[in-house]
Image (cartoon, rainbow, N blue to C red; front, side):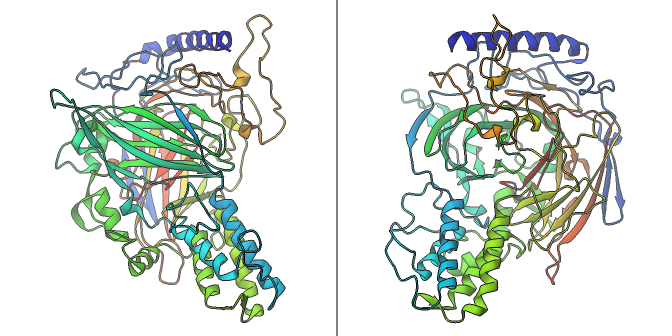
Length: 626
């Protein structure tokens, strides 16, 4: 494996140099790239929404499909990023040709845990409920954990999973996901403060750390942290210590993607203004975590907190749904959750909607959950289970015929919860838009009129070697007309921001390939690890890896890009003057609607074409297009 890895590093370096030369004429790198002038961006109202025409791209027109990697590709420079004044920003070089994980602070450690996820555990409770309903009175009375789950216990177990309550040790013992609800009502409790670290001798501040717990399973990434407060480490680099729990069907390549502002934090600067100092974003790691029932602990280095914006955690193997975000809790908005003028932080925005402590008592919890729309599959399950609980008599239902349709809807809602790549019942996709996005349960469901599987990297039947069916393949060159229909099923405002990752300002790919099919035997010219490319599930195969998991690059899902750096900008949203705020669901339960049109006057990158999210309630409210 050492020889193989060495070959990989040399090949990667050669590609980086060769492709970098093609773009060198346009690069000012790694210093901050130019930004669009705001007066060159058109924002205009349209019926039911807004139209944005971006500034004309600063790179010459070209296609990264017909002439890869495109004119907006920047040369790879193995240095830290430099701010506009030339100051070096620490911890912004994620990898180098020797293949080391530059931003790992120490070794990755592992621990065996239980592999069960909410998918299997919740289904077990639903099956128990169905069996009692089908058997009738006098049946299904084995009450032990080794046999059938008692009816009331099954309902309570399901509600505990959905609400994120403590779980029954008799039936759901030592679950890694305990406390992470399927209903996303607990945002105010997902904020953590970065704790400063001081030199024991000089007592000077030398860093800081915050611990984050995450679970990966199915199409989901959930975390106990959606915001951090870096205010005590503004002037020093710090670390995030991740405890990543890989549960059933959760194998993934750990891929934190950090975003930094060019300007340091100012006490009274509103986010729409601060966002105009958009700086650089990059992969901090690309580390395969391929064993279910394992907790991987990895510490990742960060730049000083004064420039820290947020970090995404991609799940490239099943994208777009696998993604979770940690935001900067101290970001300041000029409006509150009702769009009234105010000075309010991101944390306070969450608290206005869900309460300071939505788990203080049952009343606080129910008030917070009431903010979530009834179209959300977890909310539908929650409503049904509470109704079923009132029908329990002993270990059976008092009126089996009456509960039968409710139980059928319970299973349907469960199945719809499993994916965000299809709109739930009661919501229809707009055939005239490239994508229809539904805000509900503090996340985003998406559906396109037609799913197209693209060539991606050319390494298999799935674009970018992942289960990705949301791609704007028609967008190769400027101008490109993008239309999105936004629907809101929740009982509070959501906002819309559309981000460009390097198309307008430039992108860099350090070409640390991780797909085993890209590793070529230098003697034969043949792939060393050929795998079956005929199936649609190859992205979930465990891959060969090096025995030293803490140094050499690992072979993972095989995105065409890893350890890339991009200079980002906002296409649509408040930073460029478009008030893209989607009103709450209507009184009769009909989702409110907003139409968005964006004319892209630049070419996309090969990495990601459209990143869409809610800046008010970020966390898992993300839906990207490749």
